[in-house]
Each structure stands twice: as C-alpha cells, then as structure tokens.
Image (cartoon, rainbow, N blue to C red; front, side, top):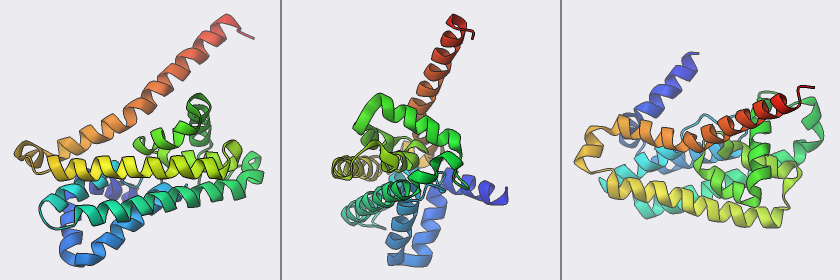
Length: 219
C-alpha cells in the first residue's frame, strides 16, 4: 500500500519529482527515463508506471533547458519500441500457459485488451500507446498469437514515434505556458483522464452490450 501511495504521489507531482531527479542525477536522468518507459511498456507486471504524464513532464523540462527534446524523443522512442518488442516475446513465450494463468497478472486486464484487439485489429498496437494499462497488455496479447511479428513491429515503431513525439513535444511547446506551469497537477490529471477515457467508454459499451444480450437470452 505504501508503495502504491508513493507511486500515486510521483505521478500527481511528477514535475517536482522529475526536477529532483534531474538535479541529483544530471545526465543519468535520460537513463532513468529510458528505464521507466521500457518497463511500463515492456513488463506486463508494471502497467501502473507513469507513461503519458512522464513524457509530457520530460518535454516541459526540455523547454526549460534541463534536457534535450530531440535526445528525449530518440531515446524514449527506442525505449518504447524495445519495451513492446520484449512484451510481445514474453507473450509469445508464455502463450502455452495462458489457460493456467500467469502470476502477478490480472486475467481481466488480458481479457479487456483481447476484446479491444478483436475490435480494432492491428491498429490496437498504435491506439493502445495512448491508453494506460491497455498499452502494457496490447503487445503481450499480440505475442500470445494474435499477430505475426513482421506486422507487429511496423505498428510498434509507428505507435512509439507518435506516442513519444506527441507528449514530449507537447510538453516542450505547451508545458512552459504560465497557466500550465501554475496548474501542472491539474494538467497531469487532465492527461490521465483523457488517456483512460477511451478505455472507460469501451468498458461501458461492453457492459451495456452484455446486459442487452442477457436480457434477450436469459439462459
């Protein structure tokens, strides 16, 4: 519980924590950010690590001169590509064990991502980049058997470029606007809300469809 509260505090006050990291670690900050993005996209057991908000905050600090926006873009895009690739092969390797369940992984997250995948097809890898939790499980589900690797890597690269580019350069160009700087926590809330909104809409639609189906066929 204490770890979860610390994570929530890090996400909601990510500008304060990132500033402290930059002051303490300097150039090593790039490596820390690389590792966070890689783990958030590459390890199926770490879906709660910050993604969108971290990229936006990093772009904001780049605008302040603390980091290089182009180096951030290149390194974090590579981290996202490698993360999804590792996640794909984890899914591919663990596919035979799916029926027995996988430790530390919530089965409902897998099911929700699989349903999203069936609806949107290969585009899921790109769309999921902008959706927390689903972003972590989409490449895993693809590796389980829904997509051949050659096709997956194309969506993986395109999705990483769009995701990292949008948020890093979004932070770079808009993060230093006085109204944003003065209300950075609210901006982070807005980013998180907009990120999870599509998933919430899909969840509500699925529940409504399930309810209608039970009403028509009670058996």
